[in-house]
Length: 159
Image (cartoon, rainbow, N blue to C red; front, side, top):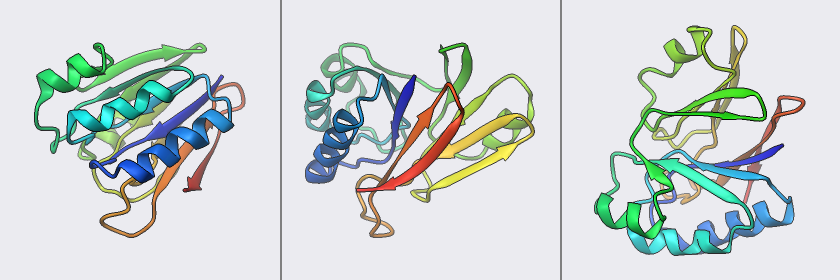
């Protein structure tokens, strides 16, 4: 199973559309968004994704009720615990607890956003992933991550 992972879209419609197009071209099976969609109109772009998706609210997500409505319930409060392809994952937005979550031994994958900086590292048996920022507002680099759950190989991809 191939996952597409993004975070911190912050209403950058052109870059979010690029991320969706990349994920569709890679035939991902599932998409995860680690928060900070920001406004409900950004979620409309996810109608074009050719797979299911889910995500968590971030600290900059304003109208949570409308975001949840427009996403048809795909955006949840954090932490979001998922099991996909026999891999247990947790998705949060903020970074303060991610090392402890990875160190806990409860998860194969820990996904987060918030810092806008791409991270991919192992802590014990867990893979810790921050896909960076789709928006490119903070560091000028728009990135996402791809994760093959069969091999546990992951990569950061610049848009």
